[in-house]
Image (tube, rainbow, N blue to C red; front, side, top):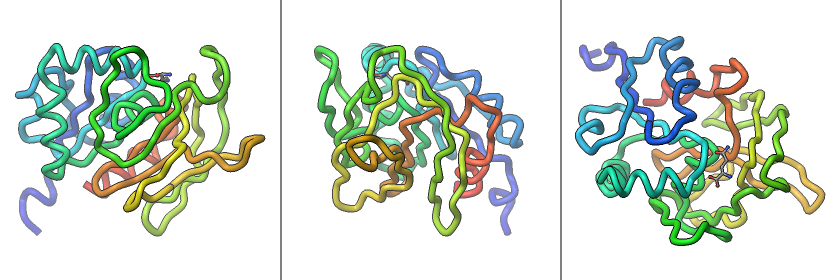
Length: 202
Ligand code: GLN
């Protein structure tokens, strides 16, 4: 074991809009070192990054105006692990069914995503969702807040969570390479097991 193996991981949270504090407090409760990421230089030395929820079109606009979008995309292509939640999933997708006007995504994961897929803008619900991470399945207490669903899962992408809907099973969690992305918020309900499993994989 080297010193690097035992060091606390330094985890960034993309902090352009909001939805940040809950992730920071879960990460800190698990012993990770954290950093708010707004500028390209904030990516230096990170062991992983969280792309939080809120409004994906606003995150996109701000990331481009802060000049962090392209460096972030390159860092992930270079192997930086990502945990994306809700708007973070939308921002990570290759394609959107219903983008806002001019909305761009990072294209980190080969999926098509439908924004606000659970009904009207205010729709919000809590439910238990089984999420498969490697050999373990965690039953996560998840909040769906104007949540997206994945409507196309590309080659090389693993569906790690689904929920039943009237039109069949909807994919709400996906993983491709070092990117794990979820439709819902695991950080809202004091359930830190998903972050713990992700940190353990860094
Ligand atoms: N509907 C939002 C969007 O398009 C995502 C909602 C959320 O992150 N809770 O970005």
